[in-house]
Image (cartoon, rainbow, N blue to C red; front, side, top):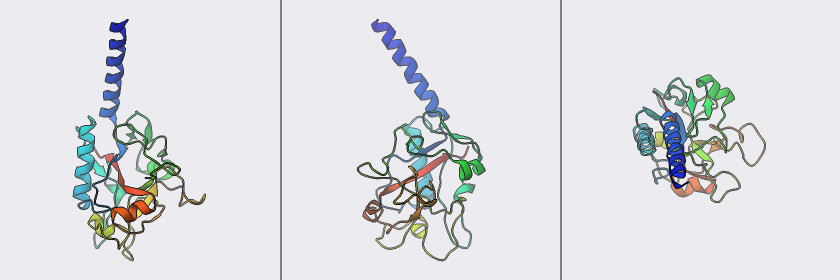
Length: 210
């Protein structure tokens, strides 16, 4: 009996490892601890890669789903490859970029971190459902009219702002914006405290681009 339990345990562990290697999407389990200062896109990508590696999926090329603004903006939708993407449990999030932005399956149940664990949402303590994106609903950057990326992910000031999405699809009202996974509202600032004050924690989405 003991041998059978060991075999079952090993098979289960192997199945989990296989799913992790096939993983193409996750929400960061932790931020960088400096609010929306992620070290720019380079620092955010490196964080995605490091978390994926620790989870057994470091063999893929990981990119943060973040937009930047400026004379040559970078659009989050163009950074993440072509898809399809699955979460750590092997559940498909989207088939391709268009599917992601029109029929995304990101939710409280499917929007898992790199360890396959759910991320706190509205109603949990603490609420961590504000996910940094700096993006419009179609995954493109905003026009340069106001700060929507906390100075392109280099600011941890109480000033400035970054657009966030709700991974749990819940907000203060039942509006399209409140239900948006990638473009719900601007943050109250760029510091860790400012992000936490509206239900965030400096987390962001990571996708396997290759």
